Amino acid sequence: MCGIFGYVTNKEEALGPILIAAAERLTYRGYDSVGAATLNSGKIDLRKDVGKVDSVAAKYNIAEMRGQRGITQLRWATFGEPSQVNSQPHLDSNGDMVGAHNGNVVNNVELRLEFMAEGMTVRSQNDGETCVHAVERYISRGYEFIDAIRLAYGDLEGDYAFVIGRANDDKLYAFKKGSGMVIGIGDGFTCLSSDLPSILPLTREVIRPQDGEIVTLWADRVEVRSVKDGKIIQRIPETVTESMDAVQKGGYPHFMLKEIHEQAQVARELIHLLDGSPDVQPLVEKMKNARHLYLIGCGTSYHAAAVGSVYIAQLAGLTAIPVLAPQFIAQYAPAVGYEDVGIFVSQSGETKDVLNALEAAEKRGMACFGLANVVGSTLTKATSFCLPLCCGYEISVPATKTFTNQVVTFLYLAYRLAGKDTSELLRIPELMEQTIEMVGPQIEAIAKDINEWNDMYCLGYGATYPIALEGALKLKEITYAHCEGMLSTEFKHGPLSAVSKGFPIVFVAGPNDVPLIISGINEVKVRGARTITIAEEDARLRANGDDLVVIPKSDAQISALLGVLPLQLLSYHMSVLRGFDPDFPRNLSKTLTVD
Ligand code: M6R
Image (cartoon, rainbow, N blue to C red; front, side):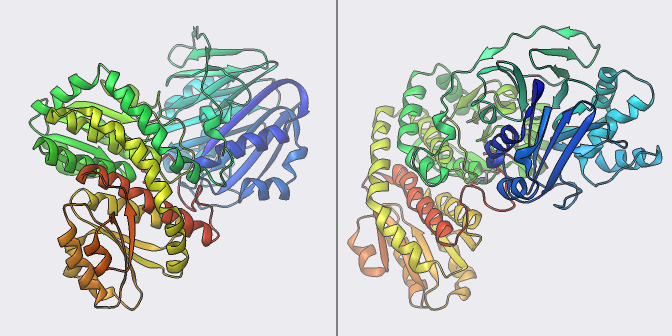
């Protein structure tokens, strides 16, 4: 969801290639427009437009841009349609300053009107421009630059990270509120970015500024000041040891395929981590003693929560309520209290809908815990403790390995709640590897067969019901087809009328639900549907349906987990066959920091 990058060196140099490379590394966040600005000896060079990094860079010859400081921004439209004028970075009224942001300034509309009334030149609808004018306002009132920034910080409401530079200067200035930001300190340069992967290839010495801090970047040093009183805050840089492998495709054509293949390994690491974690037992106790237990998330993370609630019911006989984060606020938050427990589930740990729900729950005193992949994200800091998903970076917008590790975590917690031996779970990684191997070629062939269809259904029951929802989301997300996930038994209550000859319907059948699924298969088959069933080997399923995609034998819970792998692969292959980039589906962003 939008991304910014800034770079400061001590003399004029070719910054274009550095900015393009950094922009490329931010693309996984999702974007529709690209821009770059360089600053040097009183001059600002600004080039930007709607489009992909390579096409905008080629059209405007960004590679030739030179300067002593540079800013690049990828925009995912929220305020103002995707257009050249709304693209970032933005200039102030006189073209003396340039800045860019990511995130959302929620009082953008009001501030723009104020700035226009004050006589500033407001060119776009975009809130990034509002950030620049917010600083300009105080400069024109005679404030020093750093004080103007401090005052602007107070005026700009929302969650964002912002960088700004002046033509006649040798520094960049940055601050953040809510959103993430990382500062990098290199040899002869400093840089900043919305996130770590985009600066890792440049340097491993980083500072992570907090809300309420302003960072000034020179080529050879950075200075952090408090917004409140302007005083300098001493910050020691940390050395990041994370591997760069995660942000490279490692021989796979797409990150998504690589991440699908990483699932067994990250599950293995997760199970070992959970086995050794002192945080698990206190969490299990809290869950066991909760008056009500809520599992809260959005999108794929919500589907994992929904699988988790089935596991907890089936194995431990306890009720856990899975709920979409915004609906939690409307439906449950007014009634929760300190006796209740919430587990907030999120890959990014930055999803605004989830953080809003967390805030609502905390206000009522509910005990709030997290399950997140990005260590250091807002969720990991805002909850009393947050279990890590241990997946490393997930670059591809469609979540895959983080989903399966969320599900594995819930299965692990359900085992502990039930007092079951968790060593049984150690077979999961191998079963995942076998599944990918067993289903690969068949799924590719099915993808070709059904690729012409733009309407599909994915049906499941019990633990495979949320797996069907997740499969449908994956298919929608990267094939752009309409695919609905549904409880298999609900299909006859309406959607059955949509069935025509060849209409593809995917069933995910748990080993205990075969008779029920066979009824569903026959109901649609007699009306012409083509059925694809994901299940363990079963002669009855083979006899009743069309394709049977066989997954390894396990049990009701693990089988549901394995069932998602063929669905991930099906959506991946259909996306590629349609000529789309599964890693970066149109209109979507990896991290949704807006309401
Ligand atoms: O980072 P989060 O897990 O909180 O994100 C929630 C959803 O936006 C996310 O799962 C989304 O549905 C995925 N892109 C689906 O693949």
